[in-house]
Length: 317
Ligand code: C5P
Image 1 (spheres, rainbow, N blue to C red):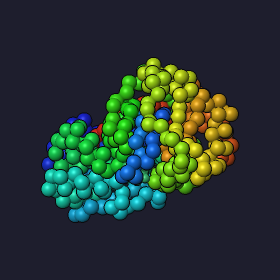
Image 2 (cartoon, protein in one colour):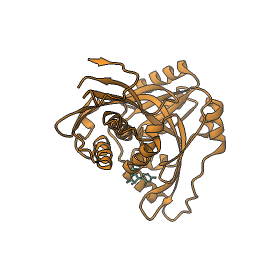
Image 3 (cartoon, protein in one colour):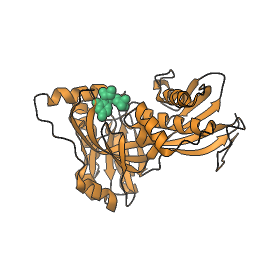
Image 4 (cartoon, rainbow, N blue to C red):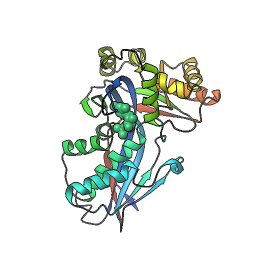
C-alpha cells in the first residue's frame, strides 16, 4: 500500500521503498557553441522545469532490476544503459554499497523527446537510493554525481529555472516571477541527442560559431513572469538541426502558432515541440488545435516552473 510519509529518514532501516517525483524540462534558450575537443559543445542553456513528472520508486531487492510503466514504457531501456541504473551503481560504488535495488519508473515524460526524461530518471534514482540507504549526501555531492551521469541530470535534481553553462551541467539558479503555461506536441518516435548535435556541426561547418551567452532579456522575462516577453526571446540553436532531421516538425510549429501560441520552439534536441500560451485557457485551445491538426502524436499541457526531484513518500517493500 502506498502511504504518504513526510520524512523518509529511516525508511531504509525499515526495509521500505522510497518514491521520488522528478519533472521534465524545456529549454527556453539553448545557445550552442562550437564542438569542443571532447566532442561536447559549450552551452548557455536556460532550463525551465515543467509540471510533467516521472515517479521513481526504489525498493530493496536481490539484485539490480528496472521496471517501467506508463504509455511509452516499451520505449524505455531496462538494462544498465538506463540512467536510473547507472545512478544506483554510481552512488553505491561511491559508498561501497552493492546496488541491490528494484527501480520502478512510472513514466509520464515523453521518451527521447528533448524533455530530459532519461535525465529525470537518473536524478530521481540517485535521490531515492540516497534516502533508501540513509546516506544523507549533500546537495553538492548529489549534483556532482548527476553531472557525471549526463549534462542535463543536475538540472533534473534542481528544478525551477537555471542557466547551465559548460556542457550545461554547471548551474546558476534563476528567479521565476510567475506561472508560464506550456503545451507540448509529442512527435512519433524520438531523435537521438548525439545525432542532433552532429547535424548542428554539419550545418555550421565552416562558419564562425559564436561563444554561447544567455540573453539578458530572456532572464528578465523569467524574473518578471511575463509570457509575452518570454515568447519574444525563446531561442534554440538546435532547432535548425532538429528540423533538418525531421522536416515535418515545421508543420507542428506552424499549427501551434496559428492556434494562438505566443511562441513556439523545438524542445531541446527534439522532436517534442513546445508552445508558450498566454494563460491556462489559451493553452487548452492551443492543445486542442494541435491535436486536430494531425501534425503530432499527442499533446500535453503543463505549467512551469516545477520543483526539482522530491521525495514524495515511502512505501512497504
Ligand atoms: O551529457 P549527455 O550524455 O546527455 O549528452 C548526450 C550527447 O549529447 C553527447 O554524447 C553529445 O553528443 C551531445 N552533447 C553535446 N554537448 C553538450 C551536451 C550533449 O554535444 N553540451
